Length: 236
Image (cartoon, rainbow, N blue to C red):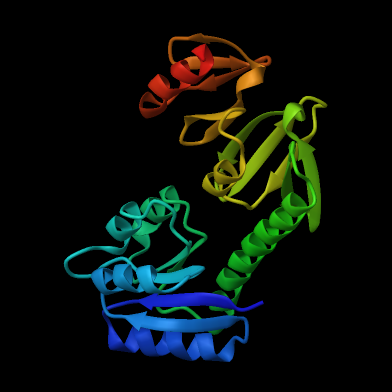
């Protein structure tokens, strides 16, 4: 499987390094190199891109602000000379953050994370084709694919670069999938985001009190931006 990729960087030397690394890695299909975020936004309209190597410090529109304009961004690997932007990058569910200058080995490691994510998505899509009414989600963890019934899931929480899935059987599955990608795979009528770090099963909600929601026997925080939607979904 080839990963259709875009390079977005305003520095010619950085472009050259990324292009060389991409050519040396057979899994990468480099579709286009863009000099700035506005050029990249146009490229996204014309091509089906799965991965963006995205610089942060660029004129007119930064890489971080570019991602914020996208409703369904592809996988993002941020590239920057400034490590202090890493937290902002991961808040946007970036797959990885490469601090310039980075080695080819580090580049390969980042791309492999994207490949794992796409493999999981493809496996889930394949299972969807064989089930007219899907009542489960597929989670990749420990080099395995877990089929988890929606009714068995209590909640998801992100912890650093990982997501933990808590089930009614007391089992905890840890995956390096992003919470945002998991949210996109879940049926909206059954699950709701309560916080930037939590997605909960609506069926498992016992009550809402203040800035907490009791899910099964677990108190879960409620983020201010998610509270109104949570209450509306709980009352539906």
